[in-house]
Image (cartoon, rainbow, N blue to C red; front, side, top):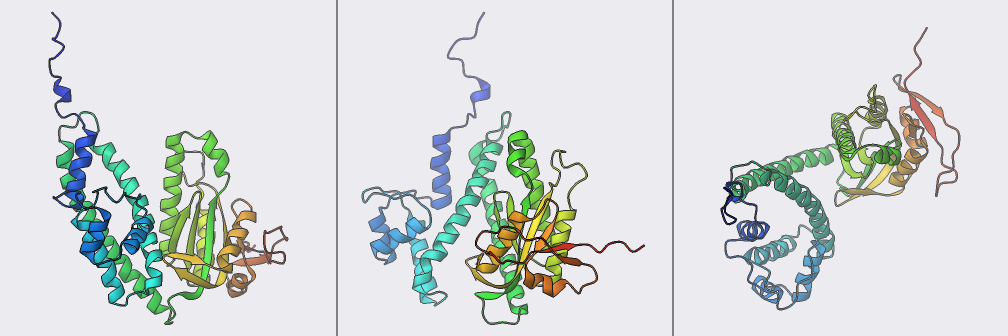
Length: 341
């Protein structure tokens, strides 16, 4: 005797419905009323010019909406009012507003993409008895509280770091800038499985971040197979550079092992803007990294001069190399002192 074709499958009782999840998630995250306002209505309710509202919407990284497309909620009105309040409170100049919004939008866009992939992987896992929508309402508040805590804690740390520099100029300061780069990443990405490559990158980013923080530095961003960081103290920056190249595991081919890296670091006045750093010092550090040998550290002349008298370092002139944009750039190698006999 065979089952009737229309017999419900118990395994499908809580089937994952993407359309339903999107609808409920949107209402839950953006307001119980759901989308129902056009962009013109949002601008009018917030008391903001339509063109200004559209510019902010684009700066946040959201797709354009037609004049008749009712895709906005009361939360969008509140967000526009909050932006206007930041200007009214003189926290920033109106000309800086698009850059601030654009940076926040791109940061949260990347984070939201990663979190959504993680969340979908969890709530659609075969065999789970809990409804996806129930999981959603439990997870989101926890993540939101955690994000708020992390943001507040970083505000305290950033304020302390800037105040201890003893300067009122928060846009520029003398810093050591470093790049740490995975050696042979392109070759490894072709040879390793997706899982093994992901494990290596995760180890690299995690342990590099830990070493930077332990040195009193700050990770600025990850750029593919590189990490850009800053350290205010030159000696700490040199010690960090050596710690990074010395971190290589005995068997770099093992899954999740810390890979072989190279480091370039330079010192000087750096422009800090919207969480990123700019200027010749950053460019020089990048160039030094590109010509450093595997497992080695290169410094520019300024940083070398600041640490060469320290007993824990051995600083020597390195052979000249072709460095794009800097024909007369001095290269200095940084190593540990030779063991005394």
